[in-house]
Image (tube, rainbow, N blue to C red; front, side):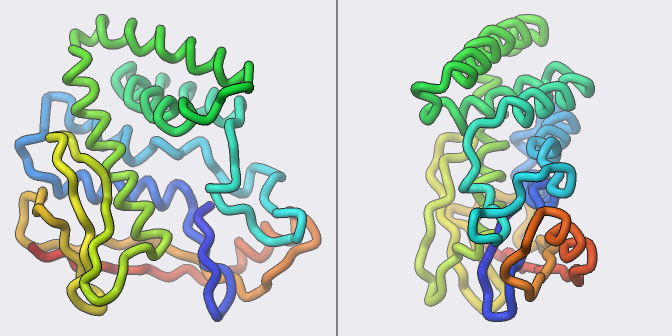
Length: 241
């Protein structure tokens, strides 16, 4: 879950909603990025967090009884294995991009965790096998993955409300062309990206949020009930060149 503390309570965006927003972003990228595997690329971006189904887990609360933000979590073998099982059940290409994403997320932080090191080592070998089977070069796989990572980064910035007022720029990430991009808010509900990487001069993005006024919960079951009862609303942003 992506958790924002607001005056009205906890604003919650699910990992799957964040992934769907990332895919919306990718859909609007300049069409020059599209390959014969474009649909699979969009699916990988949309579903890279699909193994995170919030209500299926019990580790939903902090010791103080508040909801656990995604940043608080570390390597979880079950989550990573499910991510790869889901991806591979669709295609090796989707599995390749999801595997690269897990390495990006956990690769630098798994020192001392034997399970994580072993899992990521296995993934590296699988990535090599899948690239060979799919006739993809390392550069081609990296280009496609950088689009996933860039869209993931921008989606997280939006979901975490990290855009800044007064046209102050926020770095997003390097895109598939290895350029650096910045997010800039130009009006109350309007954003731009510099340099502009998208096909259209203007479009709209949206994602669903839930607001839970209750701040602490006695257990995961109580939180689940509050989550299911929470009002769902849409946050919309206009993007303009």
